[in-house]
Image (cartoon, rainbow, N blue to C red; front, side, top):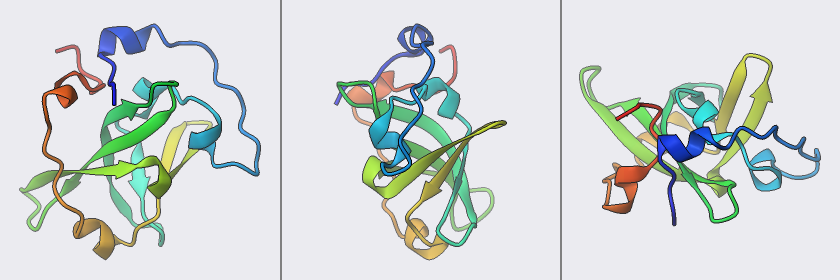
Length: 129
């Protein structure tokens, strides 16, 4: 799976096509991946699970997966979790994107930590470095 660097992602500024209500938004349209950085991620019961720290794009430009930064067992512990497109929905709100994940807080906490590989080093992170 290819990821985009911030410089390349900045070129993807074409307006998004509105999704048909019968299809999940992330399957119907390519989302502006850089706009998803720092978007809040909520669980099935409305509990905030974390914030998007990286976006993985599929070959066709649609969002394939999100890396979510969340607190660990202690407030000082920060961990990252990878969720694939089948496990979340993107909602385009007036003030930005909202990610609705198909997990309870307990299920999300039980997901394995995301461990970056060589390909992930170029993932969209929202920083200039």
